[in-house]
Each structure stands twice: as structure tokens, then as C-alpha cells.
Length: 175
Image (cartoon, rainbow, N blue to C red):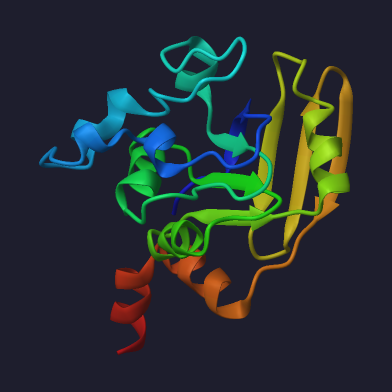
């Protein structure tokens, strides 16, 4: 089963699009693994380094509204998956990106702005770790000597997809 916990990468911006997640010039790569070095390559945020240690260690991404907008492509969730990032938490997601995450057995967790502000309150700590319990629909965050717990909601079907490991594994178990 995939892990839904680890160091957090905070991307404090709305409307991060699929071209920033994985540039279109890499969509001809043959395997998912070939996408790995290009994660967030075109994302421009003050102080953000796509090749930096924070990106390399990240297992959870926290962002703002409309994450994954732009072109519909499975490559955007795939580049997270091959980099061992199985959770993206945001206020909202582009519909196709969100569904592609669930279809790949990954979690796209939507939180209200106030809850995101709690998470972003941890962005200055180098030791911030976020854990998502899909079954209990709970998030725990700790860092800088602090700890918080948050709740989220996920549809029963999307939860089943994540827990099964994605659409293919879910279908294999049901049909």
C-alpha cells in the first residue's frame, strides 16, 4: 500500500497548472519513471527550487485553489507518483487532475481555506511532516514543536479507489 505521509512541500499559490507540474515537452517520455527528474520544473515561486532538497524529500504537497488546472494529462499525477508523493492537499482541484489522482490510487484532499491556513502555518519549519489517514479522513501535521489535527471528507468511491491502489486494482477486485 502507498504511504500517505512524510515531509511536506508547501506551494503557496493558486492555479498551479499541469504545465508547471510536468512541462509538455516531456510528455513523449516512454515510462512514468522517465518523468521523475522534471517534477515542477517550470513552477516559478519565490524561493522555490524544483531540484532542491525540499522537493526531493517531499511526500505530501500542500497548495491553494484550482490545483492541476490547464491541460488534462495523466502525466501530472504520474510525476508525483514516481517521486513518492501520493498526497496533494489544496482548497480545490481541476476536475480531471483530481480524478486522475484517485484513478492512480493517490489522494487529492480538499480542505477549506481556514484549514489550509493551519497547514501553511507550518511552512516555515524544516521538520514539518503531514500524515493522512484515508480511512478515518484525518490529517495530522507536526513540526516546530507543534501539532494539529484536521478532518476532511472524501466520497466513498474515491476512498475505495485510493485504498485499492487505483482504478485498475479496484476493478480487478470488483469485476
